Every structure is written in structure tokens, then in C-alpha cells.
Amino acid sequence: MKNLDLKTKRIIINKLSKEYKKANKKQKGEILTELVRLTGYNRSYARFVLRKPSVKRKIQTRTRVSKYQVIIKPLRRLWVISNFACGQLLVSAIPDLLMQLVKFDEIKVTGKEKKLLFKISSATMDRLLKSDRKRLEIKGRSGTKPGTLLKTQIPVRIFTPWDEQTPGFIEIDLVAHCGESLVDTFINTLDAVDIATTWTEKQALMGKSERATIEAYEAMEKRFPFKILGIDSDNGSEFINWHFLRMAQRKHITFTRSRAYRSNDQAHIEQKNFSTVRKIIGYRRLETEKQLAVLNRIYELLSDYLNFFIPTLKLVRKEHIGSKG
Image (tube, rainbow, N blue to C red; front, top):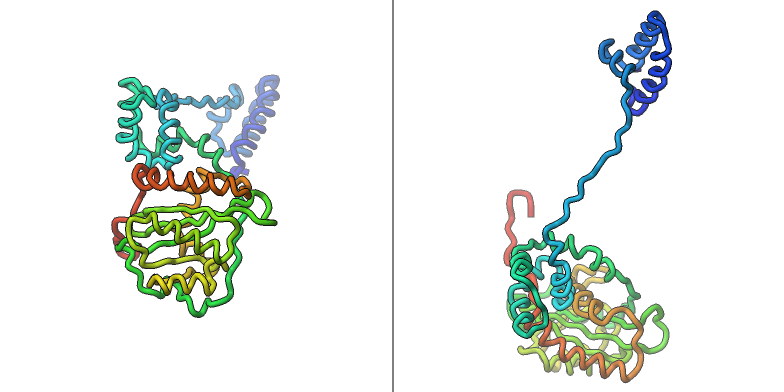
């Protein structure tokens, strides 16, 4: 009986304690012996808990107010302007961003607030903005359908030599602005990112026909500050077709595809789809020519904003330590 949990022991003590207080000397001795047998306590401690049974105390938790609460308003403003960047990116962006905003009277901060904004860590930023970030967690539908033609003629990227240190090798993908339904024609965004420089461009198109996809690509291609040398796409039919393959061959572009059902093969563009399309444009259905024109105008303005003013993270090196990669 000595292996009772604490909760059970408390129940026994509270029950015997009431009897113990009313009992005579002989009965107290019997109750004490019974408690020692049940709980394994020594008689001295058993006598003590019977006289003063433990009472479950209410646990009081102290909530310390963060000193950074005073900067939550300017921090939220900087976070929105930085395209809802994560803490690691926002930390590096704040000095230049804040300086420019103050210079043009777009934001006002006190000396104390400025000092805290320069001092705050990325982890603290993420904690303070946790509730705001949660509101962005919206999901949409995927409009990708696999293209079965030409798969044998378009090599898989991981088996094809790619110079990821040279500008010009890009990943591309389509982002569907279909809302909750994939029926009828709706606008898609052709998204592209250069692996070496992280330069990103977008172009909206109506539907995702082979012809519209090529026209959107060629319009977007002109905005890249370097020549496109390689294209890597998923297995969607808008890319895996004769028209797109011939266009790549005509331009002497290395055209590869990712493995089926391996989203990590296109990790760079998948990240850009969310951070530079979904966060800004959202998940609502877009289906009119007027919306198409407005969206492409937005993408023209976003090109400078994303490529010159928003910091990005890049892997510097990989180090193998023992058996750990």
C-alpha cells in the first residue's frame, strides 16, 4: 500500500483526520497505525499530517510584463511594411527601414522606443507578433494538375547539373486565385525566383493555358536584371507541354522539372508563393479582366519593393560534424 499516489494519500489523510480529531487516545493510536500502514509515513510525520491535513493550495503564477510592450505599435507597423517578415528578417530590416520612415514622417518613435527597436531579439519579436501572425494562417485550394506528356523528355532537376551560384537559374510555379472553387476560368499568378540572388518576379494570367503561360513568362522575363539560363518547374500541365519545351529550347534555356509529389524539390518557390503572393494578394477569387490589369500593375510595383527593400535569408555553408549532417 506504500505505492499510493499523492492525490490518494491526501484523500485518506483528510478522511482519517476528521476521525482523529474526535477520537480518544486509544482510537488515535489505532488511526495512526492505520495511516502508517497505508502510506508508509513514519509515525511522527503521520501524527503531524493528521493534526494539520494538507490543503490544496491555489498555484499563483506571476506574469511579468515585457518591457518591449511599449513598442508593440511601431513594431506591428514595421512588420506590416516589411511584408509580414519573420523575426530573423525583421531584425536586420529595422535599422534602415525605421530610419527612412522617420525621415519622411511616416512613423514617430521616442528615443526609448527607438533604442528598444534596435535592441529587441528575433525571438521576442515573434512572441509579440504571435497573435497578429495567427490571423494570416489561411489556406486555399491547389489548382495543380500533373502533366503526363513529355515527362521522359524533360529531365528531373536533381539529376541535372545546375549552377545555383550563378544568377539565371530560376524556379517557377503557378498560384491559383480561385477562392473556394476551381470551376470556370480564374486568374493565376506565374511566380519565379532566382536561386542565386533570390530575385523574384510575378506575372498574372487569365486561366493557365499553354499560350497564356508562355506569354506571362516572356512578360516577366523582361524584368529580370540578368539572362535566364535555367527553368525548373513542377509537373503541372501548364509547364510540361510541347509549347513550353520548344520556347525553352529556342531561348537555349535548360528546362527541368521536380519529382512528382516532392514539394521540397521546389522549396524556394514554394516559400515565395506564400510570402510574396498569398500574404499580399490573399486567397480570394479573382476572375475579371479589370482585376487582371490591376494585379499586374501591383506586381510591377512589387518588383522593386521585394527585390530592393525586403531582406532575404541565404544558406552560407553546410558543415558536417561527425555523424551529424
